[in-house]
Image (cartoon, rainbow, N blue to C red):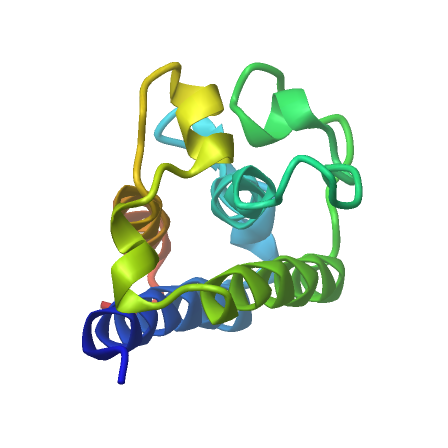
Length: 157
């Protein structure tokens, strides 16, 4: 039984579901709008692309179809994916995260996660990686929700 891992996965799935719901409720007029310093869809791309940090070093190359610099907010987007294209990307990245989660059990949560540790230049455990993957997107969910509300939409929160 992996009570802690299962609980963390449940929280992660809830957060990921909110990210996907934002895609569904966002009107086209807002999709490529810049607000709060970032383009709307770019915030979602940033969250989905974080799955690249989960990948083991010997796995397939990282996936950044609209650019790593765009995903990391170091560059402005020069193209805009459709909502469907971003959904396909999100599904691919979710599958990678789910595969990583499937390798975990409660005992392995305190082991060091190489990808996150390398990215942050500091030792980070698997549970810390879970926390980042579940917690950080809430900032962007809130930002996107505020943008939706500022544009007369209901939002997801």
